[in-house]
Image 1 (cartoon, helix red, strand yellow):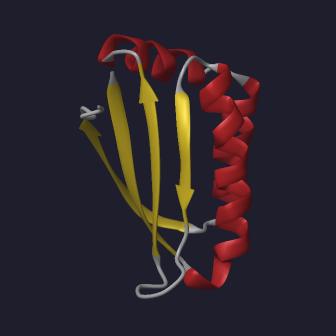
Image 2 (cartoon, rainbow, N blue to C red; image 1 turned 90 degrees about the vertical axis):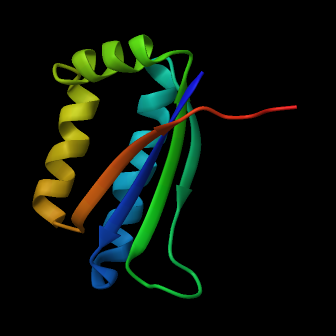
Length: 101
């Protein structure tokens, strides 16, 4: 299993727009073979940092998802949503391997 960790720098004045974007991606990732663990939005502390975690069975299945998403209408619509809203200033992506019981 591989877990993708996304750290977003967001526009704090566009938090509602970012939350709509986040809600769009959760079912997409799940439909396309991953397990989305959720988005984590600012509460206390920094008001411009959000996180997302989702897992795929392997890096190969994640790479397949990335290829398929380029032509998936829901993925394209989610990307277009952020292009219109511009709630994401930047993001970084890392991959981790979970340690489970």
